[in-house]
Image (cartoon, rainbow, N blue to C red):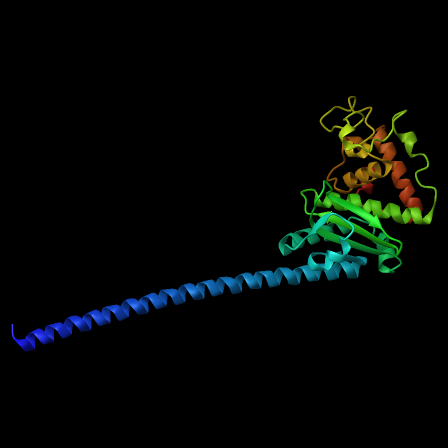
Amino acid sequence: MSQDNLKRRNLSVFTYSFIFICVVLVTILFVKELNISSDFEDILYQKNIEDTVEQENKYYINKIKDEYGINIVYGNDEKSFINSINAQPQYDINIVNNNIKIIYDALKKYPYNIFKMYKDKKYGLYIILLDKFNDNNIALASKNTLNQYRIYLSNNEDFERSFHHEFFHVLEYYMADQTDYLYYSWNSYNPYGFNYESNINKLTDEFVYDKHLSDSENVNSYFLTKYSKVSEKEDRAEMFAELMILDKKEKFLENGSRIKEKIRYLMSEIYENITVYDFYFSSYLE
């Protein structure tokens, strides 16, 4: 082989090698660019979803405030509200979104004029959405000296029921401000000699309604849950919460039921002290 041919061959090999390397480098850069673009698009997509959820949360919070005079609080805004309780704030905007919608639908079950006290700003009601309590609590209600009521709700599987339970406590706070004589005859609707038990570990199923039993077996039922037997207030709140989540007329609402007699007395006190009548479950009491 001549010197010229050898030089041309070496140059050709070098040229092809150079071109190959360039192609490989360009391909690598292109693939990386695709990955970067894909990652960036994912980030933008996620950001748009989060912005949409945040906007929807604000929409429902404003709607609940405008229609019912009730304030919803979560995240950084709730830190000043939980100083006195043992709980963790709720920062998950998707959980908040779900729970706000549950509250909004739950509020529709109440007579609208029951919210007049909040709309007129004579009383303030704050619903604080929590991640969880650090103890065994699921929810609680409180009242301060400034006519402010607070409902603390953790994220739990019975969220709507928890809301109705605590909202009833708030109703009783209001009713107690209007009169000193509430539920004067309450204990007469309980079994003879019965005493409430604050120690949850000592509660039994005695006198508790069981939907799986026959009417004759439930004849001595006075309470809807074991927790009802903790105190008068919890008894009434449990009863009210059960009524607010009914989707049909249960057997404990049949005439002659001891529980129905108790419910009628409960509602008569509400009707007298708040002057509202058309609750979600009213037709089941007829």
